[in-house]
Amino acid sequence: MNRISVPVRQLDPGLSLPLYSHPGDAGADLLSAEQFTLAPGERRLVPTGIALALPHGWVGLVHPRSGLAVRHGVTVLNAPGTVDAGYRGELKVCLLNTDRHEAVHFERGDRIAQLVLQQVDQADFMPVADLDASARGAGGFGSTGR
Ligand SMILES: O=c1ccn([C@H]2C[C@H](O)[C@@H](COP(=O)(O)OP(=O)(O)OP(=O)(O)O)O2)c(=O)[nH]1
Ligand SMILES: [Mg+2]
Image (cartoon, rainbow, N blue to C red; front, side, top):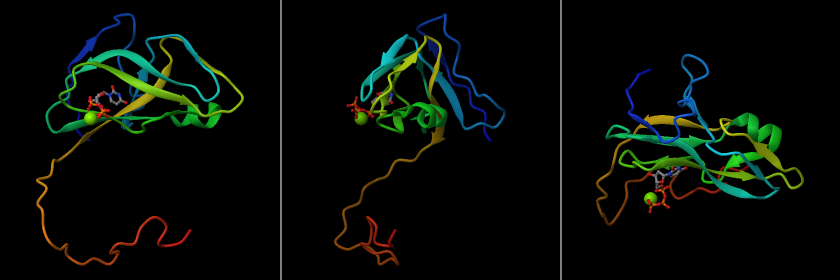
């Protein structure tokens, strides 16, 4: 596992930095810079109080936390959110309360999502008349059965 240095601007100095709970964890927990309540079915763009300068060739992926999903039905609507390396604005998390009955309350500093850093490549998209054959072919969307 690489350990890379990522410059962080703390827009809200009272909040801790993203935190890996255990050595080797893939996701660093992102904190909420706000106190708020999500009504059933409500979505909200939640600020995290930080801005990053990810290295070129890396991406930040904003994943849901499984505990929030299982216990409260709270997920990240656009999961995984894509944080481009060149983005210098505040990291935000689009939370959605999928529960149909229960509101969910969050305090400032609560862990709302997790950031996974990965290396990525770009493609040069080359127009061609035909694609090479493959075992799967055009089968998809349940072509292999349930
Ligand atoms: O969960 C997310 C997703 C995105 N972003 C920020 C960083 C990212 O680089 C930027 C744009 O995200 P994306 O490309 O997914 O959104 P878009 O709707 O395509 O907006 P844009 O036109 O700005 O690219 O918004 C976040 O802070 N959190
Ligand atoms: Mg975009």
